[in-house]
Amino acid sequence: MIDIKYAGKICHFDDEGVDLESPGTMYGPLLKGKFYEHAFLHYIASLQIPGTYVDAGACIGTHTVFFAVHCPSDRVYAFEPRSAAMKRLQRNLELNDVQSRVTTSHWALSDREGTVDVRLDRVNHTLHTRRLDTLVRGPVAVIKLDIEGMESQALAGAQEMLRRHRPRVFAEAHTEEELARILSVLKPHGYQATGKVFNASPTYEFIVPSPGGTP
Image (cartoon, rainbow, N blue to C red; front, side, top):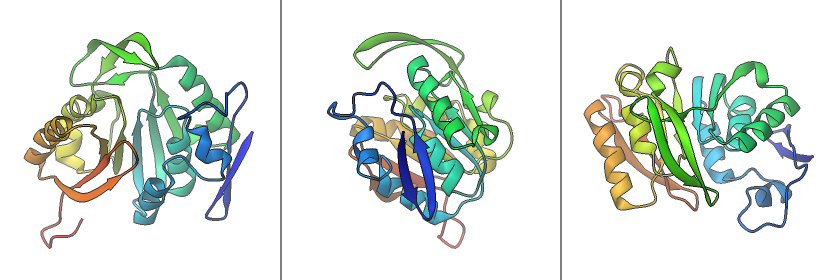
């Protein structure tokens, strides 16, 4: 087990059966005593946004655990369609005693119900898709999306959520085309990119400015 101390609290992560020396593993930062994408998570925590958080592409749950422990969240929804990652995510929730405040789901997020063929971890998968608007009820404060190029489709399936609740959105976009597709979904709801970009895989922040020009 790996222990990570942040802001006076210790979080625990299961490392059983993990090749900790494998290049590119998110366990690399954990072994150095930091969360994966530490600066990104530190920024989100600094915003102190209360309410419901959505972690789409939750993987093993590093961000989910962070949102549950270090942010003023009342509930976190974690979406991860890969069964092996979901199993470890659920174990990490148990290790941190936050499973009662986290709702996990194996659905892939899109703009429609159906299936989609994707390649993850060098393996082809057929994933079952649902719309975020049908899976999460009530106000949402923060959405984080890291879902292998399906970010714009997931947001297109959250039209009611975006219109009614205007959550702060953090979405990964590897190309200018992906970024343009995300903006095409968000702009009709008044969203703007803040100019802040995080992580090795570019993750952009989007907000709806208040009439005074602030978030």
